[in-house]
Image (cartoon, rainbow, N blue to C red):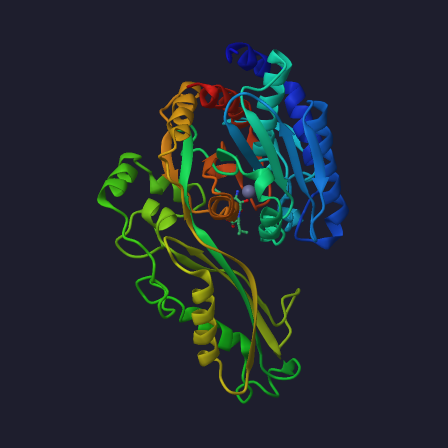
Length: 458
Ligand code: BES
Ligand code: ZN
């Protein structure tokens, strides 16, 4: 079965493919907010009927949270497990969007056409690159060159609470020769990439409570303790002046990156001035003496993602708040153990809280970093296929983001993942005005068509 007519069909049906993606993007499947539960169901239903329209046996599988979608289609080649997520991030602050986040439109920009809307790049547009490639194969040849299991999750953006139990219960059905995950990016707009290292993640929420109610800051200020000051002091102590994280034993399990890998990263000639310049910055703010790619791909972090307490409305209100809280997340690498770090973090914070205050912790996600073993010949076949589609040779890269499912596929199914995606740094994922380049969608779909052909060859 030749790939050329499949590629031609992808080109000639691009506008139908974009229309389908727009319909999918109109469903506001925000997983973290219960107000959108029905929309998550609708997005899962949409996927089931889209897969069925291609002759794929697909169904919605309930979980205690949002449903999974599982589909199967037989084929001659290796058995592939394709994963994507149909849920999206919340849209706030809504006033920073130029258009309705759930009314996607194609826009002309100086850098080319983009499709703008929540989920365009993370992950509905990426997920559909694979589905559209399969559609074109089936339309052209009546079948696929590989056996494929589709597996779509609706809770990725809210910590995947149902994922591990679902994998445990359905391991035999989902096991495959290799998993394909389309939720990462290009290295830059010309260089396609297979991501082989992902950072892990630990999420902790802390709330400090001081006085039993908000107090007048003139009547009590100076005499009563202020939980915002307590919290700020704790946050300030989490890093030293060189940017190192001060939690006891935090760096246990952080490996030194071998010289040859560091050389490979240097050869990518990553320009951190442009990377930072694009977001209005100029200086690296991580650990002293490390390159930008080392900071992003191979070093752990501790970041405050949100902070609250006291009066935040219009004007001024002179209060000492009763409570202050922060959401703190850690990106983890190597063998760092998220549960040990959680314990040490909580102990350190507890010791810093004065007697007159209480601290409460709420743990969210906890997942280890993962490194893919690229010995499987599928990696080289996919790299060659990507290189045929894009102007520059494909690279093996790391990623600063976290995709815990890749680690679970390894440990629970024994299936290695190839992380291939077509996102760009300026896609504004998780931010207002998210977009996906039409070129990413089009060449991404063509890339998958080529990868399916390559994986099915001997
Ligand atoms: N698609 C992203 C992960 C990603 C971002 C990969 C950028 C490569 C480049 C994914 O949907 C995501 O945002 N994951 C969360 C996971 C977390 C909630 C456990 C993340 O990385 O913050
Ligand atoms: Zn994603």
